[in-house]
Image 1: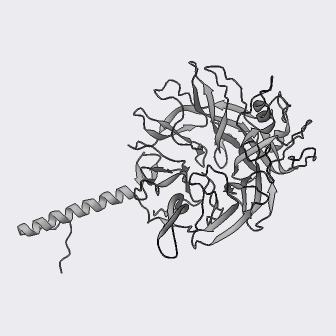
Image 2: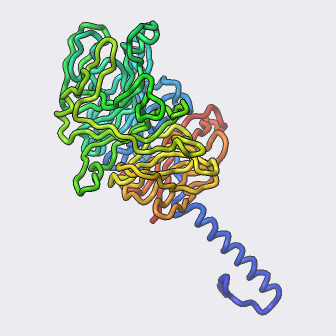
Image 3: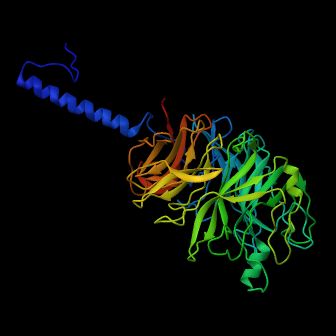
Length: 483
């Protein structure tokens, strides 16, 4: 038997046709190889007939064995009705229940510690009432150890009665992520007292604006039971962003801070050889000189010694009945991007959280290019001009994550899981394009701790015992990257 290659010579016309056919097939195969990158076929990890929602980051356990998720029913997670926090073993599909809420409360948006078996997630009000039901300013963070399932410890304390307890806040926290050493947790925050004043149209009261806070684990804050919604916390919590009700046009003042991320696993290089150990990059809403609101990239530097977070600045850390809680004296907030001069100024695209490379040198975000296509860009924590990373013909359509070695970013585009080489800007398609209901969801596309896998979610039809499709639910998928 003769084994033909694309370069074999054939003496006959028929042989030449075969030759050309093989060349076409061979070139098509090479095209497919480039198109799908170095990856195996994706695997569906969960199958249960209920929702599975991944958070946008930190969904892998520290050892890479497990994925943590919540069970909200809606495909986009906008209806906060989940009651369980679970994890699934990637290799086997085995599911473990980590926590189930009671007394009418819901829970979700879970992330895992990078150093141990803790998970942290948001918890809605127990025994909700008409004046205290689920809302952005009525939730709290709780921590569970996977080795002790079902036992939840409240993270951030709440005190709704003046004089307020130092280290406690007065509202609700959301999207909690541990720092790389597991000592701190960041979150977004809204204030229940100011939200109530906003609703009542109170005079001379600061607005309830979304900001960013930090909890210091292992620094418990006891709160007196002077209000039925007061509670103690296992961590000392403060707000670290400076907000302004009405930012001056053209200034660096912001009216909103959100979608934040730790910068680097060990901070970032300040440019003089020293390192800024703890810092958060975030999206801040500014007002341009012509009065338009746009979102820019900001950074806030935190002290290396978390104990310094207890030292107040010019305003009280806990706030007053008419003002927001204020940042500590030791934090410093800076603007990194200035995009007001662009044809399409500000960050753009789907809802996404900023993400930093592990070495802290680049912060990734989404913005439209000159052709109006949403692309990945990065900026240094020291500022400067942003660098465009992707140059795809389709919009980046999801949140994204960095590979642990900082060479690639994973994201969803054109119905596929994609991976871009940050140095070359060359994108690879890791999964076949799927459009419509079962397309990869935009909320999460997350590298595993060792960089060998990417987790994401698709909405899939349930299969009944009779083998026919029934309802559809979000299911977790993983694609293995082959080097």
